[in-house]
Length: 108
Image 1 (cartoon, rainbow, N blue to C red):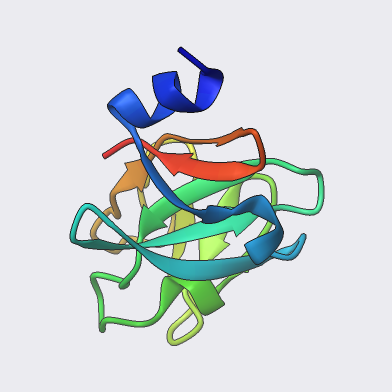
Image 2 (image 1 turned 45 degrees about the horizontal axis):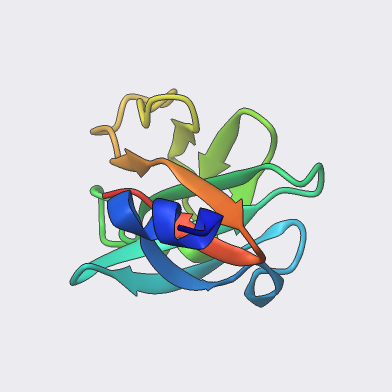
């Protein structure tokens, strides 16, 4: 069994790492759920629900740094570590994501 087979046994391949430029996010569908995957400039990968719980803003278009994601509509900030808001909004769901043989594998 290959590494990809092991990863997809518990996760969903949503695309290729190269589909997400460094410093940006992209929206994908995984197991019927809309998610946003981010590749930080330092190479770290993160995945969250695709829509901000406040007003449905597209989180994949948000700004990010090593600690938080900021919604592009109203600047609500969410921690990568647990999805909690640092600005008083409802939390977002975060998902484990990893690169396996160039694929983005998200665990739902």
